[in-house]
Length: 145
Image (spheres, rainbow, N blue to C red):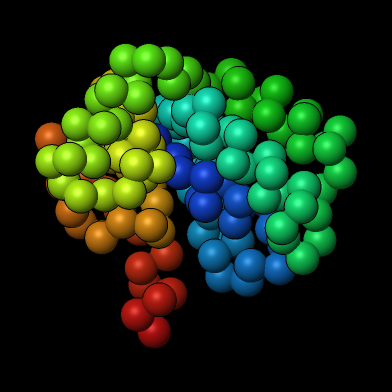
């Protein structure tokens, strides 16, 4: 499962910590665990920011800020792509080329900038490729059943 760098979108990390997410929780937890062991997980500052807000405010049983902070500290041991001016311009270019939303384009540019081979997210079309980056929805089998 873990050949090359794998970029995780916030939704995968959220499901890994949302006990009410059922099958998605189990899949996300296993996926994050595999990436942790392999040392091949990559996130961006945007992903960590979105994750923190969602898990402390929007899931049925939110984490308290201190617990969420401890998890962010752990995730900072992965490669973290920090969005800067160059990132914003690259995201605008992706947005114009592919017509993704700007925020999704910012995720894509971070994954590409990291040299990831795969992007795990439920927000894109499963199997789609963008400039050599393969997009995979780890929950596709659950959604098809």
